[in-house]
Amino acid sequence: MDIKANSLFAQMQSMSLEATGSRQISPAINTVSSSSSDFGSLLKDAVNKVNEIQLDAGAKKTAFELGDRSVTLAETMIATAKAGIAFDATVQVRNKFVEAYKEIMNMPV
Image 1 (tube, helix red, strand yellow):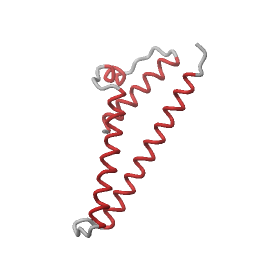
Image 2 (cartoon, helix red, strand yellow):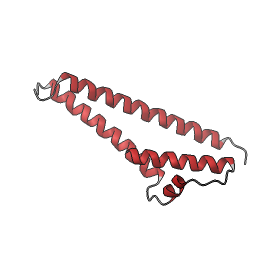
Image 3 (cartoon, helix red, strand yellow):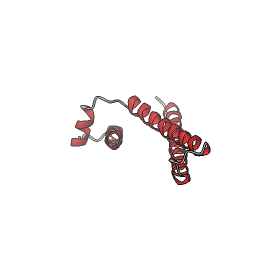
C-alpha cells in the first residue's frame, strides 16, 4: 500500500506542476506515467482495505462476545479502533474530493 501511496503522491505532484505551468519533469513523474494503475483502482483498493479492516473488527467483536478464548479484549479494542480510524479517514478523503469537485465545477471556463 505504501508504493501505491507514493505513486498517488507523485501523480499529485505532476498535476501540481502542470497546473502551475512548470515544465520541469522529475524522475518520479516518469515512473508514475509508466504505472499501469490508475486513480480509480487505487481508490477502490483503499476502500476495499477499509472494508476488510471493518470486517475483521466485526469478526473479533463477535468472537469475543461468544466467549472465544483465542481473542482478547485488547485485540478486539485495537481492531475496533483501527476500523474507526480507517473509516473516519475515508470519510475525510471523500469530503475533500467532493469539495475539490465543487471548486472545479465553479471555475469559469
